[in-house]
Image (tube, rainbow, N blue to C red; front, side, top):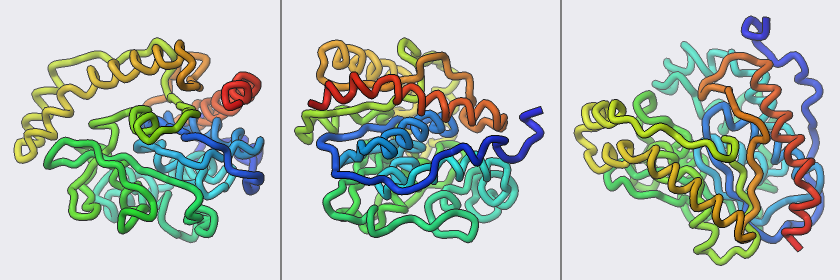
Length: 303
């Protein structure tokens, strides 16, 4: 059974190599969603294979983690991390809890270690490429946009962006105590528009039409858990409603031709911390093939 396997059976099918070609005008906006991020990893690998190297990428949570490898031009690096090491306890499990005080050790995926290929720092830190990690300030509840070259440690900002509330400690970034960017902004299309980008491509990790349930149970938990951070707790209380409003706005912008959206072409059943390696692998290929199907329309949009 796939749940019993520790590594994705078709790991060797995941593409490898380095992105080539000129930078593509525009901004790539990448949603998070923990292990649902395998979808955007598939999309971005296809992009890199086909010379779509956007000059700016902004990512939230898992979208920031995958965006790091996209901005470094390393095809397949994100996917191999998750499809090979999902059941490695240094990444997720007992050792992660010991070292990161969280069941998910984000440093494993973004900091140098002996198990992962080294990050191509020359490409990632190229000043021609903008990279922004979105996090949430736990004191003010405001969305923080940490940009490479402008914040002191962009890797720490990515860690903050992907640190889930309730289970992860806050991360200090430039004096701000931060957690998951998705607590205040799931899909940062507004930032791209405010920056003046004409070409904006959004990668979602939920199918079109998906909306979250707005539950009062989570409201009570947020107030109890973050009693010392009441404004942040309020953001958690409205998080699902805020997400639904973002999706409504994105639907309209797509209809108006202002942005281009790639979203799963079938319902996503992968859980946030999914352990079924077949489901994770299938989600990666869904993203890859959805990007392939959208290539002609995307090329037309960019022109």
